[in-house]
Length: 390
Image (cartoon, rainbow, N blue to C red; front, side, top):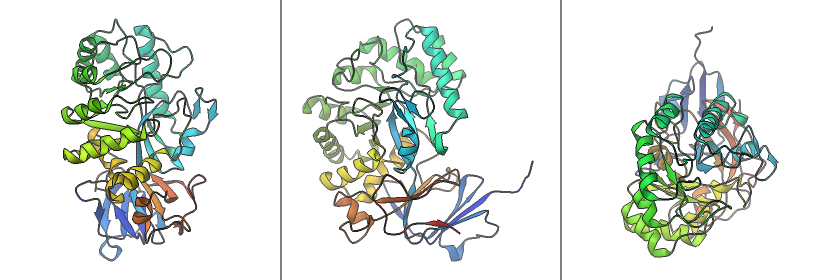
């Protein structure tokens, strides 16, 4: 075993986005990473960049913490039977996302609904994505859907095996708030986070989850508060924004008007730090490789939020709500980044103004754990400038 450190230096950065909503931009033009963690942020002239194993010349583009998709439905590997599609996770990496969080492996054909079977599948899914990272993507999976018959020891067993998330509450047989609250409490006791389906049915077998049930259940994240697909009535969305103290998740595969209502209500309540983003794909709407970037541009342009803040919804807010070691430009965090620039011929004086005008940026590179995982995106519009490994 070599004890030589792996050092990645990213220099000539034009703009540093932090993911921290209280201070979304930082001064500096260089980031140093050692063994997959951020070890220094600042100006190259002030930093020790000696001994780099990899040096990236950012060519003046913007560096942000890798984007996080808070709501996906993976199944196995880089394949989704819901849309008979291969390599959807690699395509999402090409959209600047470096971490995705499962809201349940619900599209698995023949998904087991007995307690033994659902635990077995959750543990297996957690393992197979821990062992296999498609194109380097971090897929935090193994999210069991709660069913009647589960008892406290089942949640302890899941947690002991490494399961950290519940699938969307409401997609299984548990449809009442009292039972769901008991199971969510057991999950929380053993360190498992929970998300609830919010709104009308998404697929046959799911049902309406209204604001009363969301509040009674008390999950850590209000899953797709803007519906997945059908949103709740406006007054119920406002009620949830007022009464929920944790993640208010807006998704691509939901109702855009309800998304803007959520954003505007959260702003009025001084709760923008609770807004997090997901795609809710793969689903009937398909796969959205650029879904998180599209949400950032949509919320910034139509929701009157500056783009640097809107990017925090897509990384730092999610990192904090979900207690992750990614999504923030801070020493000690994982060295997961997206390097992007204003798209060629897109209006706006710079990348942030261009995004606030509703345009997607061009992704030029992703880096995960200090390793380059993709170059010029095959899915975004071409960027004005491209970083390169020197």
